[in-house]
Amino acid sequence: MRFSTIVLAILSAAATGFAQEMALTGGDATYYNTGLGSCGVFNTDADFIVAVDIHTIQSFPGAGTNPNLNPMCGRQMKVTAANGKSVTVTVEDTCPTCAVGSVDLSPVAFQQLADLAVGRLHNVSWTLL
Image 1 (cartoon, rainbow, N blue to C red):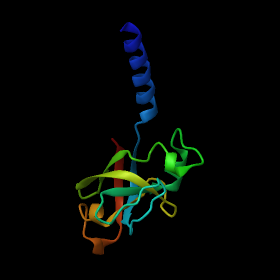
Image 2: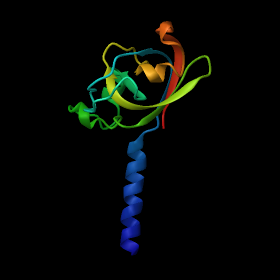
Image 3: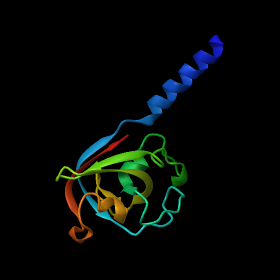
């Protein structure tokens, strides 16, 4: 029993260290038509998902050459607009044209922050949960 507890503690510590806390501010939020994302999951515009800027997702600790196995994939993220509204989304894709700290949201997620007609929100912040 003691061995199980020690192994579980080591695994928990490793998982916690690997979870990586991350928060960025000052980026933009846009929206895009979803589909098969770089994490290997097919999503629809009605799913609360996010594509993270390519620099951030590729430099995330543990990222390798296979984007389907990126440790950011499947993580929850809270995106907050300058207007104070926020939405919780799941990382499912990469945004190759986004600046560092910027995100591309599914239409339904963007609508939690602003009307789609706005198109782009400046000075957003996000935090991995």
